[in-house]
Structures are given as structure tokens and as C-alpha cells.
Amino acid sequence: MGIHDIFAANLRGLCEKFGSISEVSRQAGINRQQFNRYLSGQNIPNRRTISRLAKFLGVEEARLFSSSQETPRKSSPATSGDLLTDGIHMPAPRELAHEGGTQTMLQPGFYCCYFPLQGSNQFLVKSLIKIAAKGNCKYFLRRTVFRSASSQKATLAQGRHRGIILANSSDVYLVGINTLTPHHLSMIVLERQQIAGSTVLQGLSITRGTTAHFASRVCLERLGTGVSVIKRHVKTLGIVPTTAPDLNPTIALLMTQQQEPRAAQIGLPYFEELMLSQHQDWPELKTADTKAPQLHKAIV
Image (cartoon, rainbow, N blue to C red; front, side):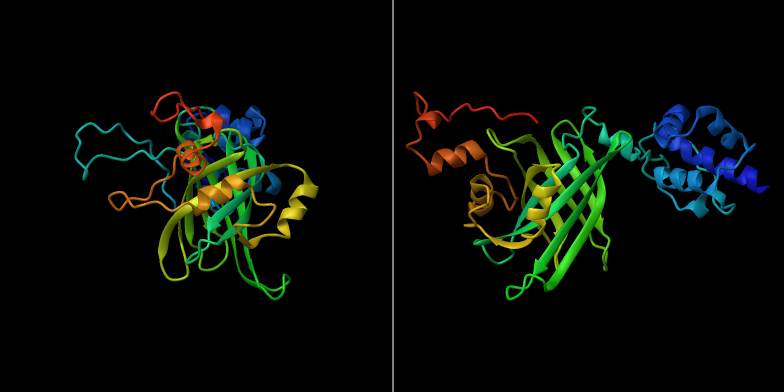
């Protein structure tokens, strides 16, 4: 089997995951006629196109020329219900990203991300997230820095997570891996609703700390795309007090409010009820009867 045939077979097998050859060639930015020549083994792309194809398909460049890999076969529909014999079809990231709609809600740009500091309800960990779109998918980079209290230039620890953004009709998931050793995985689950009257999103984070896994609340606040704004926030990454003057009061309230455990589950506070309990004298939150206020959340 020649190198042209090996490349063509591997390319065809990898393209099966996406369902449509036209979609692959379009999103990879390759002319369809030229792409057909690659699939038939007539031509092999130049180095730049190979790199682009491998990155789009999510494989190493060497994988496209490897003869030791079996050509992936299409999964047949499961019919028997037997876990030992039925195959499992794993949706490609693009399928997951469109589950429940064509948007994953989080628009490209920069976001501040806040976690509670372990062992303290007076401080938060502030990190920065960059979201970018490629084709129909969205990806993120998250940078976390723990600076020394005595010197802002001294870094005690840091994290650089990168991953894909997935979504369904109710939630958005940021699934990533720390590119720094020991490469821990993490996941942030955000409600597909922003807190009414703000740019804040709330959710839960599952990650691994120094010695164990833990789950915690998390809040995201959109900053926009302006470079000057981002530079200002980069300087303040790390541990910040909940009383910091530039901290959004909504974030401070959501991240510090204590809740009684319900059946040993971790839950998110309902913001309007929380505000009502904190400010009974707010006229706009009062209702004519004793029922809980029927307030609407804005959909992003």
C-alpha cells in the first residue's frame, strides 16, 4: 500500500466522524475538488495543509500517514440492549456543541472566572478565560495565577487549562485539561441563563486540587474584547478579597452565601430568592402576597 493510498484511507476514516465530506472541506478551508483528490489518493497536501487538516481533525500529523491504524468503521445502530455486544456511537465535539441549539451561548471574547478560595469565605480566586470560535466549535483558554502576597511579580503556582465548549438546551460545559504538569482535567458547568440585570453566569466546577478532587461554585463575568480592559485584569489575577472595590457585588453575594446541604448534594442558590432574603425592604422585590416573587431571568 503506497503512501498516497495510506493517507487517503486514513483521511476517509477520520472524515466519517463528521458525517459530511463537504462540511469537513468547508470548515478546514480546503477546495472541495482538491479535497476529493486527497480522498482518492491522487494527491497529498503540502505541509501547511497537512498541519491544518490534522489540527481540524484532532490528530497528530503522523496519524494521517500511519499504516498501523485500522480504518474506523461506522457504528451500527444498537438494537439488542446487550452492553457486551452493542456498539457505542460517541458524538463528535461538533455534534455535542450543537445539542439543544446552534449556539453554545458564550460569545468569543474574555471573561473573568471566580472560584472560592479553599478554607476561606473571605477570598476568591480570580482567573481569566479567553473564548475563541473555529468553524462551528468554540474553544477556551483559562489562565490561573497564584501570586505571592509580598510580591506581585512572584508566582507561587499557576494553571493553564484549555479545552472545548459543549452545550445542551439548559447548560454549557467547559471541558479542559491543564497543559501544565501533572495535566489535571477540569469541567465547569454553567446555567444557560445569566443573572437578571447583570453580565454574570453561575455554575459549578469540578477539578482536582493539590491532594484531592473537589467541587465548588464558580461565576463568570463577561469583559468584552477590548485589549486595554484585559491588561488591567491580568494584573489582578490570583487571590482577591470579597470586599475588593472592583469586584461585582453580585459575584461577592453568590460566592459567599452559605447553604445548608440538601441530601449531601451541592446546589446553586436561586439568586432572586437570595436577594429577597438579604434585602426585605427592596420594594421591587416585594409581592402583593406571601408567595415567592415570579421573577424572570434573562436568556443570554
